[in-house]
Image 1 (cartoon, protein in one colour):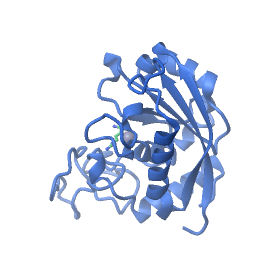
Image 2: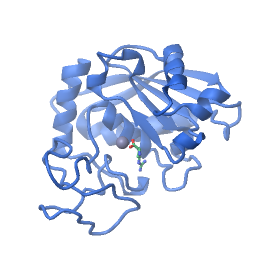
Image 3: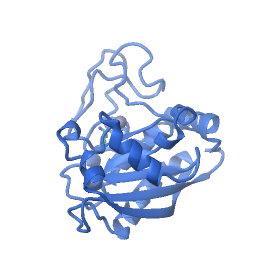
Image 4: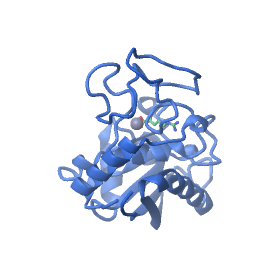
Length: 231
Ligand code: ARG
Ligand code: ZN
């Protein structure tokens, strides 16, 4: 990267009570998560610094916030979001409602900011943090993946084997999301094995190790265009 940029990160802990199992993660887990994030984004020239932490006990938000029933998340974000287009807001919740079952996280994209600034940011499962209780997804790669959307990246399996896929040309196309950490997975006839080690696939955390140079270029372009961030 030509330049390095630092993004302010606002962490919003939403819990159903004041216990760890209820989502009240300690500051040390948040620090460990941000360390993972910074390690994963270092080659791209992007770094995140904790600019504030909020703690809210809300049974309703902890359990019911999810992308398909927007009422709770709109209310949560209106109350908690801080900063502007260049600031990263992260909400940790429980996703226990049936509509959210199995969800690890979801995010907005840079181009969404202008039409709905309050919605901007990532919502993640609190137990996906490093040391959390979600089996196979507790090394912090969920936030790396969600931050990938926040900087403008699509899934590596976008569009399957045909078409423009994820709009990045050094991520070989794949037919569908990978799971686990398969050896030699190759779902498309075009050159290249499936990018199962990419942060923007769906593999296990232990399998996720990289962004490509093409993804680095796309994030730089998206960040400059929509968030006024130069990397
Ligand atoms: N399924 C989620 C999404 O599409 C996140 C996947 C995260 N994967 C992981 N290994 N932590 O945004
Ligand atoms: Zn995703």
